[in-house]
Length: 132
Image (cartoon, rainbow, N blue to C red; front, top):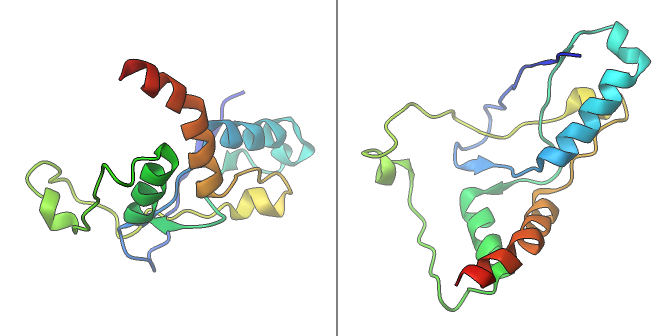
């Protein structure tokens, strides 16, 4: 079965704000949506991210903390102008997404970004330690 996705952005937040999610969580929601009776009513699913938000700075700080590298790595806050030479394409005002359709159908399995980031670090930190 093919799904089409429409990502809808919230425009009331600063563009530096966004959320981190895991593909596995999205897959669980899509499987339930695709296998349920509700798919007959609508062939298009709008996937929006929910539950907890943070700036890119918040995510970077948490990532460094989870890796245990707070003493070795310092994070400086910069705005988009800092990267204008390398990343010159227009950027959205916000990268925050909401899962209104999944929530209304009772199939929103997305976890908060901190939980997803912690799971990611637990999965990959042993590989990073082997490579160093």
